[in-house]
Length: 457
Ligand SMILES: Nc1ncnc2c1ncn2[C@@H]1O[C@H](COP(=O)(O)OP(=O)(O)OP(=O)(O)O)[C@@H](O)[C@H]1O
Ligand SMILES: [Mg+2]
Figure 1 (cartoon, rainbow, N blue to C red):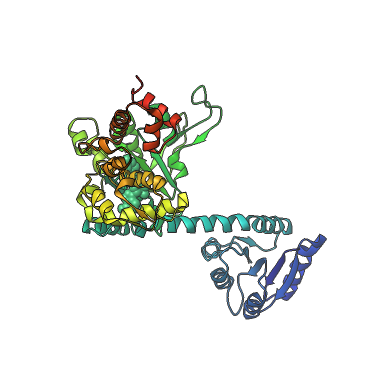
Figure 2: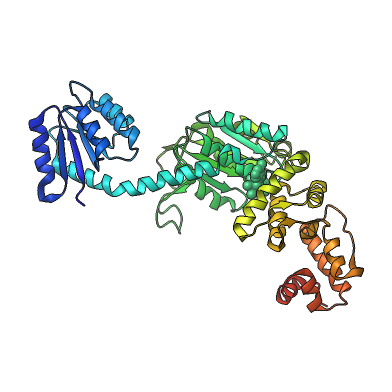
């Protein structure tokens, strides 16, 4: 299909000339309009592929035309033509949503190129917008679950911060309490976030690599730098930079980060040009930063810089009333993932979940539910599906009557697993076949686990 362009201009002679030129070689079809209202009526009847409008017209000006068209079609290519280039009107046109403004006399080749590119890019823009919308929903504030007042407070914090254009936020709290979740929610629910959410874990890389990740490098800065590379602070421009595990930054990088935060400028490694960026900064730590400050491992001035707004996430054991809500949420997630139809969690199983101490917090709850859901094969999740938390007694008793045992609370899950395998092996008189059957895993898997835990005689 040849794309159809609607041209709006009170100067009909000009409009016709433009149309003839654009239509050359059958590149575009066109319709010409002298009055904005006629254009709007026609657009409602048959939407165009693109619109080219004059700026100064007696009835409605090109900027109003643009914003009206933009409201009904957020991705329609719109080009505004101005008699003489005025910075103010150009900016106003772009703000109203025009793709470009061009000055008369119009360079037909330029307009043709711009139109073609806009038409080609339209599907990509639509897809990007859709993806952004999906993310916005996926990471919306209401996905942070929990009815405990402390959980409500977390959501209130997110909403408050999202309203601030360029906040500097510090999220504290034990591992698995939802710091990453909250950082994303702040980014995606902020009306100010136009750029990307960029995350980096400060403990995952050695200091020099982390530095080049953060600030980028110029070609030739070091032996391997064959190309220049943008740093994450550049990539996150206008968006959010999330520094996870900030306590693990080396003192040297802490100094550089502080410098950057104070000026919002930086140089790439080996670069001379100062680059200015603007973004939200969110940092997180599961360690006690104040203690790190008093130990001299974390700079006090940087601590004050990054903790302008700070929130400490509650550990799960302090918001136990949220356990049923969270457990149900994960049950639904894993129902979808594993194509199961487990409709509920039995009160006994919930009792076990509520009495556990959850040193690994919500992440641990999620993992426990994931494993339980792998093995669950009825409509209801029972204690037997939670062997790691002591629910195993029932399961084991059923197949190996003498093997009932309890484990001390607070063991790491891997230790529980090791202990569980060791005792099951003993209860089954060392029979690999039977042990694998009781545990519901393959013999190969059992052998691998025994190897891992040093349980091969
Ligand atoms: N309130 C909550 N509602 C729903 N899901 C949650 C909540 N809190 C945490 N989660 C989920 O628990 C898991 C762990 O959360 P997250 O990764 O955000 O923890 P964290 O505090 O960043 O941990 P770490 O310090 O180890 O990085 C994720 O799957 C997250 O989606
Ligand atoms: Mg995290």
